[in-house]
Length: 233
Picture 1: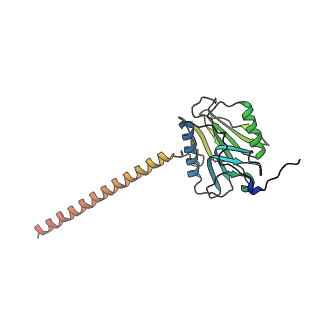
Picture 2: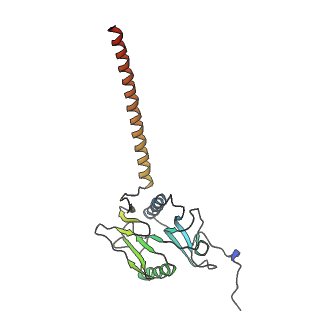
């Protein structure tokens, strides 16, 4: 008997693969903060999509051809919310994938990912171990060169350069931090952004109070001046 062919409309692409293991607070926090920082960094570019903990389907009509990606960035696609990412519909693959390591990684599994990602044309692949339990050094990066992944050199300071993102990556505690290579500025986390906003509000309020005090002093001096003029008539 021949293989049964189902209409494309009847093929189900689950939003979860049912195989991803649960993540600790350390790994979950590393993911959401990285997604947030990348989304803020690319916020003004409508053609850059950033997502995390999402299924990436890479073969049409084959729901088993799927990877759940921790963090990924795709250039050249519209920025809107998705349930999953289908390669054939988007006509694109992630430019950069970041995997947050939460279990021991073996060469067989890593080789399989290399084989898939380089075949699909994923330009960069990073691995980060928040707790330093399974990866030494705990930050690694690979760049696709002539169809094969080559290690990105780790600087003496423990940083990696992402040309695709225009960012420098480095571990800080149990999270991954980012520096804009154009400005040299550290990308803030949501908490740091909130703190900056609060500090700015305090400074504005302080400036307002100082201005009001100065205006009151000017009025006081004007009154005193008028009184002296009256006395000296």
